[in-house]
Image (tube, rainbow, N blue to C red; front, side, top):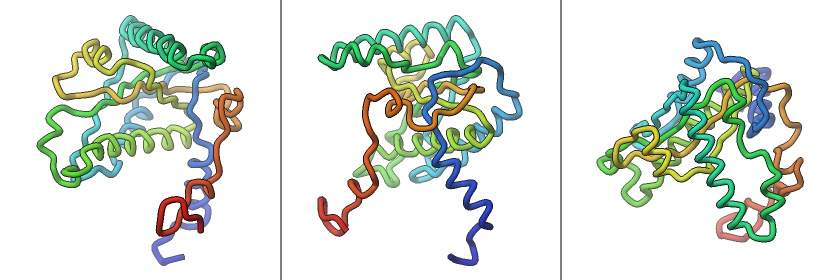
Length: 216
């Protein structure tokens, strides 16, 4: 431990937030106070970004009919995904994959336009803009958890269709529909694990030393 470490209680709080974060699909309505929403978005805005390009853009969906249109895009993709899954189609269709009509707030997280001019850190890895936005979403997720709010990341949509619906400029790309708000309770484990869809693998399966596939 170094002199720069946080106090023990603070360190444990950070690890607890990480461990108890959940991708939520069940919401209990309610609302998010404007000052709290601003605090959460500020946490997202403090995320690291390659070359300090800050590629994230957040669109708050306050219009109910527009929220319904977004939900319809998700439903259309849900059906297409089920078809692509083949023998697991029926099992997939039983899963709850979003809470767009139930949550207090819907945010769309998108990559900005004109990203090509940002070369620092992206010349060989242009997808680092997506990594940067993902960091911002994770910040938002963890901040929401410590505030007692649930958040779910919905990726079931056709990006171009959602971009057109929201009037995104050419080159911008939506990456996530984020459902945010109060929940009755947090899942004790990832929902897909609880539903029997899949089982998470331990870190030891994913940690190598010096070369790919060589375990410690």
